[in-house]
Length: 278
Image 1 (cartoon, rainbow, N blue to C red):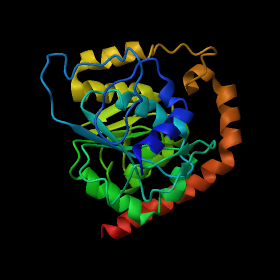
Image 2: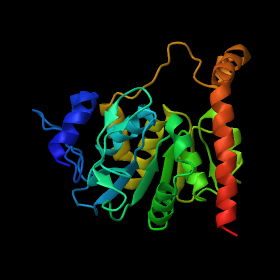
Image 3: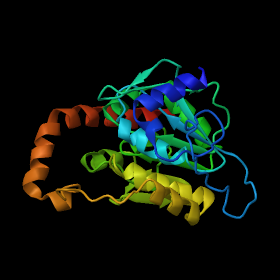
C-alpha cells in the first residue's frame, strides 16, 4: 500500500485539512503544508525512541472512535501510526467512511501501543479467532493495551481485561461486566497498562491522555491547544445523567434490538473464552 494512497484517503475524510502539520515517522504522515509547526521531540531537544501505535480497523467500526484518536496520535513526536487490519482491503465504517489499512496482522511487527476502536461491527468480530489471537499476541509485548467505546469488549473477548478496571459506551457496560471486568463508569479508566475510553467522543480525551503518558503533559497540552479542543456541547445531553430519564429511555428503545443481538454475541464470546481456558 503506497503512502500517498493512505494520505489521500485520510485527506478525503478531512484528516488532511488541519491547519498545522507535524513531522511524524512511519506509516501515516500528515501532508506537508506551508509554515508547518513541528512539536519538539520532548521539549528538551533530545530524541526519544520511536513509538509504534497499532490502530485496529474492521468493517462497521464507528469512524470517530478511530479518527479522533488518530488525529492526536499522528501529531505526537517520534510516533509511527499503523492502521492494522486482517487484510489490506478497504474498511468501511458504519456510516460509510472508507479507511485504508497500512499493515496486516502478519506485517505490523512489534507494537508499543495497541488500540481497538468500537462500533456496530465489533459484535461480528467477537468470534473472529484470527483477530482475537492477534490481540493476545500483541498485548503480551505492548507497553499499553487500549480501546475506545466497545473496543473494550473485543479486548475482553480476548481475555485481556479479566480482573481489570475498564469502561465502554454507557449502553453496553452491562455486557462488559459479563467478562469479569471491573466496570468503571468514567470517561477514561487506567488500570496498570490498560487504558480504556468510554463512548465515541471520549476518544479525544483518551488520546490526549495517552499522548501525555508517551511524551509528557507539555506535549499533550500543545496538541490540545493546536486542535482547539474545548468542547462545548450545545444541548448538554451527552451522558445519561445529563440527558435525563426520558431521553435515556428513548435511546434504549431505539437501541433495543441491537442490544439484544450484541448481548447474545457477548455471552457466546464469554463461553468460548472460558472453554478455551479450561
